[in-house]
Structures are given as C-alpha cells and as structure tokens.
Image: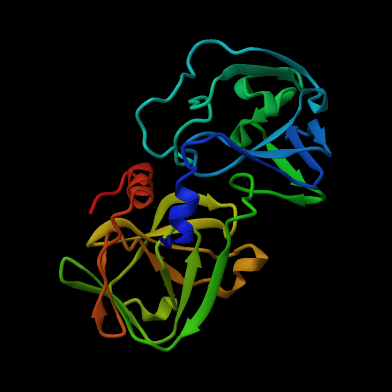
Length: 275
C-alpha cells in the first residue's frame, strides 16, 4: 500500500538517527574556537525535530566532564521542538559539561550510548556563542539536509481574518513551503488592512534568518517579518506572514482549515500562542 513520504519519514521519528556531513564545523565560546571538526555528524535524538552536530571528542578543545543534575530523560513530549532544552534527552547516554574558554558551560554536550556513535559527543547549538559551517556563519540550529524551503509568487487572492476582523488581503503573495510545516503566505506589507504594531518578540530560523513580530488589536504576535533574510529566502524580504494556526485564511476563494498537526501545536506551545 502506498504511503506519503511524510508518513515514511515519521515512521522512524522515534529512533536515534544520524547522517555524516562532509563539512568543517567550528564552534566558539567568546572569541575562542573550542570545536574544530572535519568529521561531524548530524544527530537526531528520538522525537527531536531538528538535528544537532556531533563531533569526535578529540575535536573539542577543552575538558568534557560529567554534567550536574538538571537535564533529564524525556518520557512524555511527543515532539521535542527547538523550545525544549538540549539537556532533555530521549536517548541513553551521558550529559556532559565543557570547561573551555576560561569558563564552564553545563549540559552542552551529550555522549550517546549507541555503539554506532561511539567516541562522538553531540553538542548544544545554543550552548556556544557562534558557529561556522566551513567559513560561513550558522544561525538557529544545525541545518537539516532533508529540510528545505521553496517559494513561488502567486496572483491567487489571499484573505486573512481573525475572529471576523479583516487583517490583510492580497493578490501579490509569495507562497512558502517548508518541510513539515503548513504552507505560509508572505504578503506585501502594504496589503495589511488592520493597523499593526511592532512586537518585542524575536526568533531565528536556520533557513530564513532572524524574524521580528507584529501584533494587532486582534492578537499579539500573530505575524512575523524577515527584514534581512538569508540569501535563500530573499524572496520574502520585508513581507508579512501569519500563523495559520491562529488566523482564518481564505485562499483562492476557499476557507482553509487551521493546521492541527502535532508539530504545529508544538510551535504554538513554544511561542505561548493559543487559537
């Protein structure tokens, strides 16, 4: 019986997975380079959405020591989205701290017990002050080679409402498809109908860059905008996208259902948002 590719991938979501990457990876504490590896792996712990870099322990310039209590083994969350701390693990192994750069960073490394990953330590992206993939800066988290974004202009009409209030209407949107996420509609800012105000909220996407948020009388942080996106997301520069989970979108004359996927709910929980 045929199955979708999404379902095929999801069947191994509960497994410990890894992928070798032919790249040089470096990480910094302050201005000091404390990781330099030409043999990295990408590792997905069971139920983790995004991967982490793992490197041979000898490629870490510092002392790896057992971490203090406070991490833990995750038993309940069906999905470990980026808002759940790296120190919460779903695989067997040892949590480690790193003494390097004149300081100690607790729970920033993990030595999996799996024999296929013997000698490697998985590293917390947010536990370091900067990352380089070859000679280019990385933001957000390690990039997944099986995750992509794709964008196209559309002249089909898009109408966005919240509780009956019209927020935006456009025939000049850019549709953005991103692996495992709902389709997003990026509208020209001039197509906003309701007054918007800047929010203090900021987030980072490894594939699109740094986002700032907009609030409306109908709700806070309903939309976001990439003012200076990464090169591969240049098509959405300065455009506004809404959480489909929190607004009602009519596209090409048809009302779309609000996404109810586990991942969509995990994102809503992470951002503290509710429908």
